[in-house]
Every structure is written in C-alpha cells, then in structure tokens.
Image (cartoon, rainbow, N blue to C red):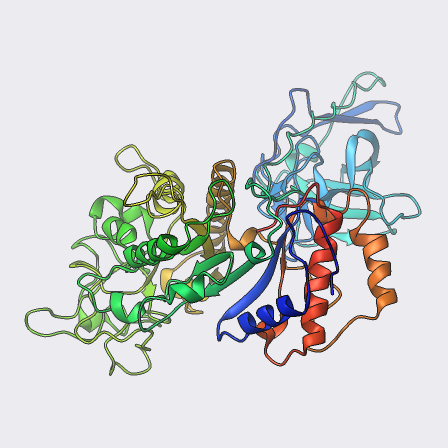
Length: 584
C-alpha cells in the first residue's frame, strides 16, 4: 500500500507498518520527526520633539529625548512599549520596528501621528497610526501615549505599562508621567517638523525572537528511518546500542548511566554521555553533512556539578560571580557555607547530610536545591534520591552535589565573560559539536539535544519554588536575570546554527495536526481540506520551521490504522514541500 513514491523516499506498505509498530513498542519515548523548510530601545538620529498649537495660537513643544532608553513589557506579555522615537524590544519578541507593539506586532509608528494638547493634565496626547490591521479594526490599530506633565517624578520615570486599555476599539492607551510632558510655549505658531521614522531594524537571526524562520543547515534526506528520533536514557548503565540504532537520531538524557556516574569519584555524567555517543557511532556513524546521529543533554540555567565543566568553575573562587548565592552569604570562607548549624536557615538545605570523619558533609553558600540530585539514601524529605550514591556523593572536594544556578549576568574573569564560556566552552565543546572520532580524529559531532530549563520571573523552572525568597532577589534582580538568560540563549542560537547545530527546544511540536490522539483518526475530506488549503500551499509556514510529528503516547494502545494515519500525514506533508524540507 504505497502513499508516496518519491526517489530515495521510503514506501509506506504493510511490512513497513509492522516495522514501525515494533519500534513503538520499545518502552521509551518515540516520535516521528519532520524538519520542514517550508530590553533596550533603539534610538534614531533625529530629534524627538513634538508640537501642537494652543488656543492662543502659540506652538507648544515637547522634547521627549530625555525619556528612558528602555523597553517595557506588560505583565501578561501582550504589550511592549518604549519612547515613541525608539523601537521596542523584548526577550520574547526581539527587536521591533515600532515603539508600541501588541503580540509582537506594531500598533503605530511615526509616519502618521496626531498631537493633541491636554488642558486637564498639562501634557499632550500623541497618537501613532498605521499599526497592523489583521484582523481589521474600524480605524485600524493605533498607539495612544497620554503624556502627563509631572515635575515631581524623575526623568527616568517609566510609563504605566501595567495598565494598557483599549478604547475605542483599535486604540491602545498608555499613561506616562514625566517632566518632558511639561511643554515649552513658543513665540510663533509654527511647529518644527515631526521626528523621523527610525530606519528598519535588521531582520532577526533565524530561531531568535521575532524571526518566523527556524531551520537547521543539514543536508536533506528522504529516508524514513532517518526521520525518526528517540529520546531516552538507561539509569542502570549504558544504553543498548542496537536499540539506539533503530532510529535516525537518538537523544540522551542527563540520567543516562546514572548508577555508574553517580558512584564515580568524582561524578562524570558529561564524560559518560560522550562515551555513550561514541558507542553508538562505532556501530552507525551516521552520514557526514546530515543531522548528527547522536545528541546529548545540557542544562541552560541549572549548574549541575556532576558535569566536570561546571564543577571546575563552581569550585574556583575566581568564578563566584557566575553562580547565584543564598541571601546573606559571602564568598569567605569559600564556598560561603558556614556549616550544618545554618543548614535549616532556608527552604532548601545548604549542606549535604551524609559523611564521616574523613569526608564530613559539605556546605555551600551558592544557591542549590536537591530536587533532582543524586543522594546517599536516608536523608529524609529534604534529600530526595534521584540516583543513589553508595558512599558520600562526590561532586568534587569543594561543594556538595546539587542543582546550582548559573548567573547569566556573570562578569569577566581572566578575560572571559560568563556568556562567552557558556556558549563557546560549555555548550560548544569537544564533548558536543566539536567532538572528533577518538580513533581517526575526524569530525564526529555530538549534537546539542535537550537544552533543559530556563529562567523566569518566578525563578528557574523545575527548581524549588522558594528560589526568590532564599536568594533575596528583588523584582528588578529577577528581570535582570531573565534578560541576561535570554541574551545568552540568543547568542547560543546565533552561534550554533551556522555551524550545523540545533537542539530539541528549537523544534515546533505542532507538526501533527490531523492525528493527535490515540485511535482518533481524521476523515478523508478533512484531511484533503487541510492539505490543500493549509499545508500544501505556496509560502506555507511549514516551509519555514523544523516540525516534530509526535506519535501520541509513544504508540501504546494505537491501532494499525492509526499508525497508517500518523505516517501518512507525515509523508504527505513532507511530499508537498520536497524542495524545501529537511528531514531528520
């Protein structure tokens, strides 16, 4: 039963279906994967003076050049704004062309403005027209700045960005108290020219905020086997290579071989991930120029000191600015912990609990929790075991094992910033994209796989919920941590993609549209409508992003017909965009 017959593609027939079914019976997470090709404002060179004529026929000018050179984002994330003469930016939207945006789309610019004096507040109202208009509004979309004269606030006073209102429909209103709104009355009724429109910002790099394109640079292949991916780990030891090579790509989690590395001295999760990749490559090295056959785990915010590259920096006092500390701890004596007496001062323990006279428990002033850390059993609820250490857990001589936190604001140490190290040594290293075949010395990259976790305004993901309280971070501290984290990730993306890298979080998980549930198939008419009107059209969004087609529930409980439908949707979509697709 053939659905497609392209050169170098794989036919979907009964035997292939049984082979796929056998793969999905493996007790690991399995997916079909389709790669489809388918906060600072920017100032302009002109003035920022606005003008209107008052009832006495006199021009009143307002110089807004002293407004803060910063962008602000509403709490719900829907709006970002800056001075009307600047261009707004945010970690989620990237750099925009307009000063006021809704859902990362400009609602007005300086090419068409209305200035009205406000006799009640002594300021003026500035309306920027020409905003995006899809779906259309009665009068388009417009940004309305209500500048209120207030000499009691500093020039740096921000707008009231938490209270954006829409009235009338399509007009988005924001109040801004500032001394700059206290106008200067001129002796003439002639207004100067309005500020110019800033030049367009360069298009964002692929996969960074604001870009609609996110694609790897690998060569395309039409082999169905090479279009499958397995995310897996074997806690008890090394993963079975034969199982790994049933898939085109295998991605290894940090927990792989945990029982081995958790009992090594010191721990060596990083090295065992590399060894696991080399074992897979020894049997199936993949094809040079295509997607790396093996990808490995890294964490982007948790400084896991069972990784040697992290431990070396964490244990060196020179690099203390690269890691978050408990509130009130200093670096002296290094690493800042003052002993078991202070172990209960925070919501998470500062010390490990197990030791002896030769190797007593270690303490650290660097913030860490034990939610997913290897432990010696017996410590109680404060020390959940995620990998049992037979002896004292050994993450080096200085700090106890734990989930420490990178400070992406970290300064320059020995001529290197934290961000440079994070991108060019921790993420990109001879353990990942720069890996070489240990026998031949030829390039044999281990792809970046699951780049886990992130920093949010509420603290790191999958970390103890009391992070802010235990570190004493202010709201501005948290915003700075989030901004610095996003800058690091954008630099990482901009660096790894040109050199052939990619990672799991850059994939769009919305590949499967028709068949997204177990035994929930789509009727042929709906299928054809979707393919003809959405997927298989010129300039389809599927030509611009890397798509993941997930088989629900790992295939457990699915009927043979469902496997046919899952695979048919994948192949039909891939078939249309054959000139543009990269299949992994």
